[in-house]
Length: 474
Image (cartoon, rainbow, N blue to C red; front, top):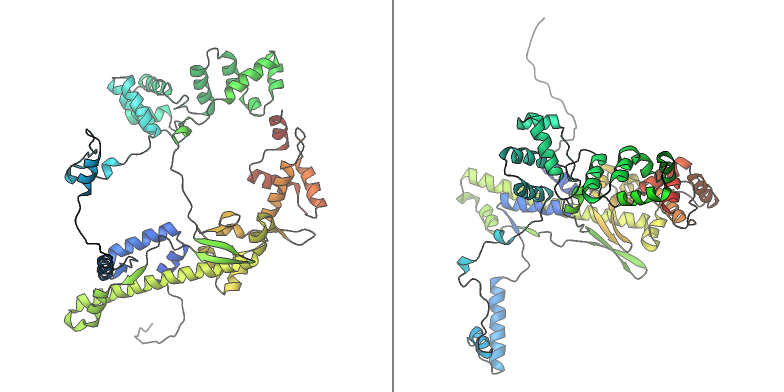
């Protein structure tokens, strides 16, 4: 076989994801908060970028101050220094003095020292542990147990794992667990629901024999509210069973819930759709979004490249291109969101006028073809973006849903769910409708739907079954 070296030329076309294109795609799918964080990070890393402040410049402030001074002199007012502090102090009754905790600003505590945070479940239990025992072994095992509790207050590791990790005996581990289980809130450090309820029964109920029996042996029947069946099996009056069941209903199945867990997340809409007479107006929410510009200092440096060495010139030029691309990417992102919302408004106008019941079936392809963009782009735009409408705040993904056939045309699944919810809300007290009966009612209204679909939509809306609704109405 003969080997030789030759030069071949080949012309091909392929899509290359440049770093700038990757950045533009990333910015498109970020939420507003994530976008603001990304911009602030870029402001730190790129010296060419600057935030455009809307406050008046120093020259404008000086000019305004001169105008005010001249206007004051025309009206016979002269600028003078006046000790308002001593004036107010002298006008007060004798013996009064203003409270000044820190006469010297250097004595004031730092901002971080004035902050406070919410007490967590672990903090609350560690505090109790420190007051309950002085035994170092018990404290060490107890801290390990507290550190392995989930947000609901349940212990999610086995005793064998605790023994292995703390290198302790079974007796010490059980003693530490019993100690922690006696802490507030009642039921904490339980390993399952039964143990959690039994701990609360032992701590909160004086005569807990019947309550403990129901928890140990009849919890499934208790969850179904089959009190008559429990009464027959135990051979005791139904009234006693009902009284014990009412006690258990007041127990907390998630002891750690009272400590709140994570802080609530507040949604700031990216877009506002406002009614203006007979039409709707789309407004982008730019509040809090930094306005970027190119630094005039570095712009002048680029104009005088000859005065810089090659490495400095290359660095400034690369940062300049990166800053310019970021500004254009943000502008393109805002334009794409605006066009997408306008298209959604065009397809779902009935929703904005009348409410969720009139939501129409729509897929990403409909909007993509309307704004002449790819479906993946629309998908990125509608991810983690929220719109404020006359009917509440919704994620943009909410407006894309499947359809169900009806006499008046295809209906969205959201509209059908709303119809099911209204039917159940209007049902007669004590006589709940079955899923099959709901199917028949919907068929009379021209909506063709299967029973299992009704059950699915009912479950998604967290509506109980017919049997559970009947028992809860008793």
